[in-house]
Amino acid sequence: MRLIIMGPPGAGKGTQAKGVAARYGIPAISTGDIFRANVSEGTPLGLEAKRYMDAGDYVPDSVTNNMVRDRLAEDDAAGGFLLDGYPRTLAQVAELDGMLEASGTALDAVLVLTVDDDELVKRLVLRAQTDGRTDDTEEVIRHRQDVYNEQTAPLIEVYAERGLLVRVDGMGEVTEVAERIATALDGARA
Ligand code: AMP
View 1 (cartoon, rainbow, N blue to C red):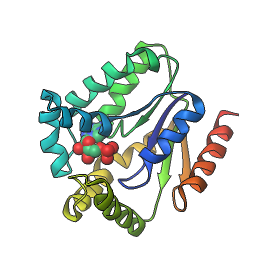
View 2: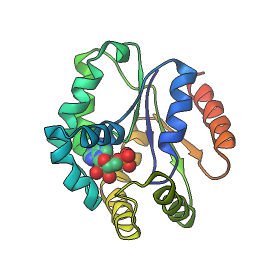
View 3: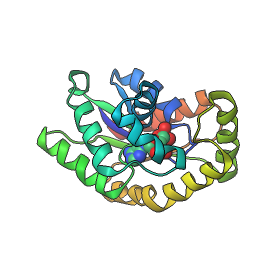
View 4: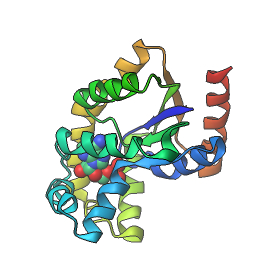
């Protein structure tokens, strides 16, 4: 399975990605997690990414695309993967298309988690308290939502036109959402 999981900040992508990846025996590849790991290790990539992340802006496409290209070339991604947080711009969609074409593979589905705006803010404020992410302050959260709406939401239409979109209601308990996802993906594969 080659999957993408999308949704606004706070939709529960990271949480659900782990369950979906385990279910299909594929790696969950989160660009946010890779950036954060680089930030904590103080690598040059981390230093470059941090200033964008702290402001709630996207890391430049060139940096992000190269990082994903390298990650997808690793052995564990040969049989499938779940991308969490990538692609986020139309330019990244084009780049991913090229990577897949070059390896003679294709996406199976693009999962979109939908959650009410009020619930999103609630979840992010809570996450700021529990995880201590430096990009989870209220001001940065708002900015990240704007950036998502401007740059990433348009991708939903692109994948819908390709017949790949699987929309799942992301409201409710983690286990409920996980069940909805499993049902929807099994339906999409059938
Ligand atoms: P996330 O954990 O997915 O919310 O990502 C955290 C931050 O990492 C984002 O707000 C961006 O600054 C950066 N980031 C993650 N994925 C991407 C991407 N595909 N393109 C650009 N920036 C990204």
